[in-house]
Image (cartoon, rainbow, N blue to C red; front, side, top):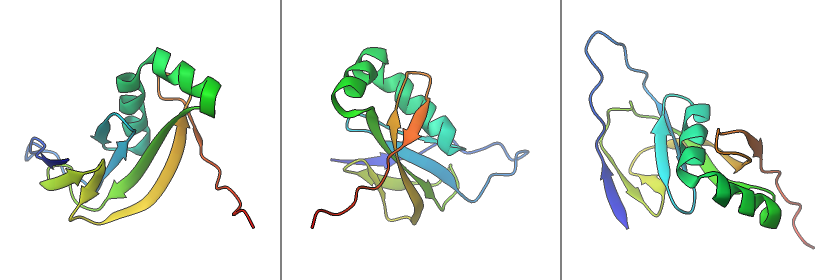
Length: 113
């Protein structure tokens, strides 16, 4: 599944940052000026009941985020819930804990030997 992302251009009076943030869950994706803004959008989209069920079964509702090194108004592809054709850096994983966007970082697991 591929989606072309075209966001509204920022008014000329506002200086646009050369990057923005992207995040996704198994159901949705969102963009924003900050990582926290993205987590809040994803949490609202998931909803309270979905997050509660995920906390009981797996410790939270999983979300993946990254910084996309192009302005928010840039055009790029989203394929399989990840930006394509643009540089994505500083990936971080979170467990969403409520519909307001409170989250905990996912701790890396030690490899099984």
